[in-house]
Image 1 (cartoon, rainbow, N blue to C red):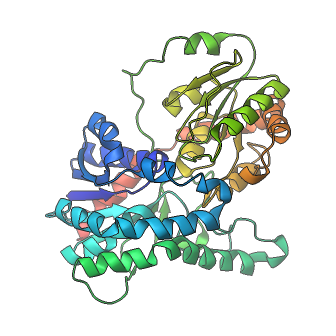
Image 2 (cartoon, rainbow, N blue to C red; image 1 turned 120 degrees about the horizontal axis):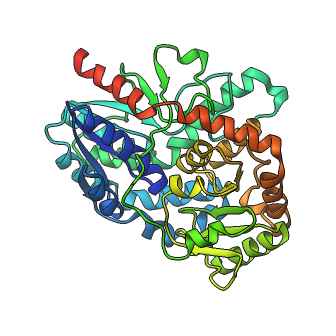
Length: 411
């Protein structure tokens, strides 16, 4: 089957789809990935066919003035302002890239232009999400409203899913209509489909809701295979081998209005907690190169690093959370925006990490306390290790590929 996989996201949101694409390719499908030009090297190294979309996600976020630090509403406003500048071009580029495909798939980012392209080509679109999006349930809160008061009970949790769905699509509604108009389509965008929906996370982290039975499937995380050719930079293994617990700290694509102040806060927390740290500078440009107890590095495979540290501190993106939980280490989530508070709440509910610290409330004192708990709480460490083992036993890519391959039979 000829399959187009669309993803408009940061690296943490792209990598799971690359893993899924590789699995589909190994199963004999012809796969093409439509993704921003930022990821040419990642996709080139993977061997997947890449159709780049014009523009850079990193440039857009670096130019936001640290909007993610201001929370979800500010991020939604920024997305609503920026997306219309590019969506028509993306839709036209995706239309050309998808010529001749039999199935299109992706999550929210891919659906933004992909749904219009699929309708224009008369091709089915399969929703493949990294978050539990799109189906109300009373089993757990919605991804954009995780802090539902307990007294609201099942009714409140179910309502939070409807609100989450509204909040997820609201910033992109106008852009999606622009994409439709550019491709000669009329009327509002419809998301009705008879295809199943696949979720690329573990049932041990978010269980499949009873209401989803036979329609929505939690497959397990979509994880890239390890890269045997990758080797650590000079000094990193020496740093890791020195006495004392090491914590990995990094906020990925979350940019900071004042990177120096954020780095200084992290350094002070490391000193107070009495740990050493690998600081991932990320798109926020964090740097603590002058500190003997902090090793700063730009980018590194999470599967390699998380297997060698005592705990992880990160922003709670879906992909990064999956990586730290899969590694079986306690996770400290510092959520900035969008779905990140949801993943932080899941980590805390599973008792494999401390209570999340919202970015706007982050201080050296509370970060140090969270790191201390993560490296010293033996019961938490044991629960994290057990959860990691269960997650590693799953074959999320294999399960997703099996379900997608069945579509070729029934089309």
